[in-house]
Image 1 (tube, rainbow over the protein chains, first blue to last red):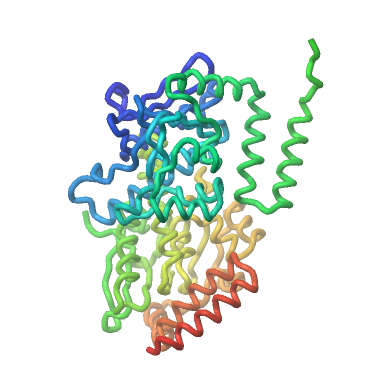
Image 2 (cartoon, one colour; image 1 turned 30 degrees about the vertical axis):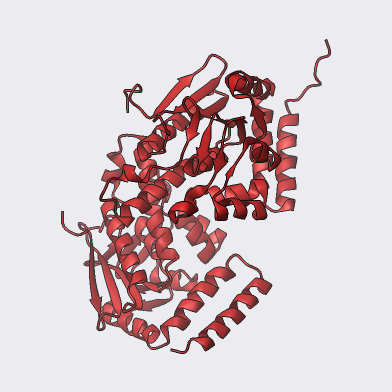
Length: 249
Length: 241
């Protein structure tokens, strides 16, 4: 775990308060349990370091991740081992989804199955114009097991989510944008640069206010209308206590 | 390593008995929970088994989680994984489609009570003490005890038991609805079996439907519950025993 050069997850803190987390198991960047442990450790670092304001999750070269590597559990993987691995993997995904600070998935290429489920656990998704996104588990007689189906539902609605899961079709970046699955599509040649501009825009926000915004918006998935109104009110009142009018130049 | 959770069957293979068996306090460990998870799966999968009993060996149900295990963690990640796997076993127990009876034969504290809370029925022996004293050791109950106790006895009593660390007697436990029956120590297990036979006497499919519908009642409204019940009744009619 200490030798990061061999780790399937590379974690780098950049000067601009961004923690860059790179899934690194070329060529397909398939998710393994070791990789998710690396992601868990990155979350430890991200959550405990007050200087880090945003987590950027990305793949290598032209692949984000082509999904969970079931063979990584070994040739004699019992249903019991598989279950444990799912429980622990979901724990990491849920932790990512509940992260109080903003998380961005930079989808630089194929983003399939567990890879898309991972991106769905982030607050923001941007993708390159060569990316392909989908949940093709049904092709191998399985269903998404890492929270992808319900997170997808919340984003794109039941009809489209069911279509994507039942047919296992892959979406083009244009369709993904039209369906609100990603919030931006950038040309591949400018992907890193444009993603950085997107991040920079997020980082200009005051971080307490940005975290408040994340709390409010994610609360809608869990709480009733009236509870959400109450959460919004409390959040506003809390921020307003230290608020002063913006200075005019 | 000896089995920290021994499994046997009684009543012609219709009841599975899981016995916590680890040291003088039946301290709960990851290995014990793992074996209990196997037992839960076996009860679910086996058509012969109709219900299960969880008890402790000797005069103790369990006095809680093995603190040596917690002290031995090398990283927060290791602790986090252990908590998630342990809770998976408790959630499977709580969501089991066949009834589990906690036969609380003696002291039932901390993780011991959390396991009992994940069962559908709790029967306890006289003079037993039950509680969640984790806060006194600088810990929080980590196996679902906080929410399951709150649902069962209400927030006020849950707060008293957890924050003040109040241990309740068998009599108090029955008064606040924490246990269903108190059985005399002398013939405790026989009393548990006679309770279990009462459940075996009715159609197992009906028992399973009631488990499902009561779970539904905890988070769905009247209309949904009515629809589910009607569906259940008609489906059972179509498939006679």
